[in-house]
Each structure stands twice: as structure tokens, then as C-alpha cells.
Image (cartoon, rainbow, N blue to C red; front, side, top):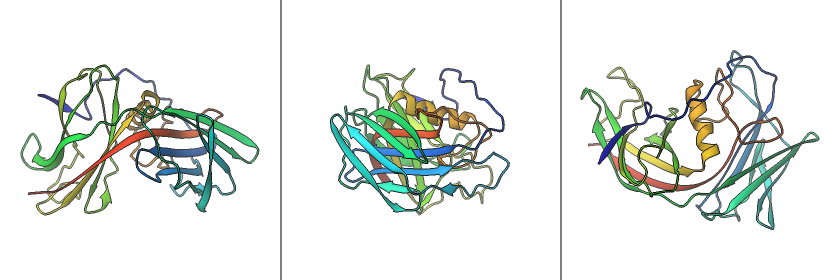
Length: 257
């Protein structure tokens, strides 16, 4: 069994451009293997030193294409577009088209095969002072998989970007501790006895993995609309920021001992 540290894992070097940039549209889109989970959010970016209250963009035309089928997403609240009838299928390639204010943005993403957690438990960190969610999963051989993990403690989302790929773990059993960098006993990131911990495991394609990897490298967190001092790599074509992700989802919940 191979023990891998999430934040210190090796990956290729990606240069991050840290600078003030023009205001741009930000598109955060996803389709998953879960029923009715097709969602696109559209906002407008701000510079890193501005307040983090992004403008939500209404009135866009949003469509997702699955081969020859086209699905329109309806605006359910300002800046949020959904289609409850579109269920993602592993192996399918999905294309996103967003038309807003006369501009067109496109993206595509291929949904990988589902990879599930073998187990989820809470264990102490290297120095024994703090508790963290710990996952075991089996990486499929030869699939070039990337993963993103989202953690909730008592319903509150942990903003840290947890990622992993199989560059050095292809086909192996992986034990991964989600180190949220707690540094004080009363740090809210420190999981305590009785806390309910939910972990969502996403299996993502390579362009989406590079988005999350570069977001973390650039100092951002797990909210695609949150400001970071640099723009992460995007798979959106046309000049917008953000990502469109067709990914599979596996969920597990545990109560901390």
C-alpha cells in the first residue's frame, strides 16, 4: 500500500502568471454521473485585491451537447443555469456552449470511468495533534486518472483544494490523508470527535485536473468563483476563466471517533 501526501504530490511544473488582469467572465460548469446534476454558473471576475462579491450574470444562453443531442439549461436563479434531465455517462464527451452579451464560449470534457473509495476514516496527522479525513482507493491501471476531493465537516465545506493524480500510483492502492493545514487545537479545520465528515471523490479528465492543480498552485481555494492571485489554467475557449468538468462522483460519510 502506498501512502501519498495530497499537497506535496509530484506533478509537472505549470507556470502561473501573477498579474492584474482585465475583468472577464467566469464560467463554472459541471455534469456528473449523478441524476440531474448538470449545472453552470456564470459570473464576472475581479482583480485579486478587490472584494470577493462577484457579479452574477443573467440572460445567458447555455447548452450542453452529448453527441448529437442538445440540452438547454434554464436559469434557476441569477447566474445559475441547470438541467435536471441530463445525466452524465462515463466515456461520453460533453461540449458546453455559453452565449452572453454577444460573446460565445465553448468547452469540452470527457467523463472518466467511475473510481470509488474503498474506505473513508478519520486518522491523526503525522504529529498526532490533529485529525484528518483519510481515504483508500484503488487506481485503475493505464487510465491516466486525475482526482479532486471535496470535504465537508458537519455540512461546512472545507475550502482547501485536495487533488491527486496517478503519475506515480498507476494501478496501485492509494492511501491519502486530506491535510487541511490545521495549526492550532481550536482551528475549525481540526476534525473533532463526533464530527460528521463527508468526502466527495471526483474522477476528472486531464484538463480539469490541471485547472484544480493550477488553482491550488496559484493560491486559490476550492470555490471556482473565489479570487486567487493568478488565473488558473482553463479549458474554456473564447476568453473566459473557469472550467467545465464532466466527472464521476463517489460519496462517503464517517463520524470521527
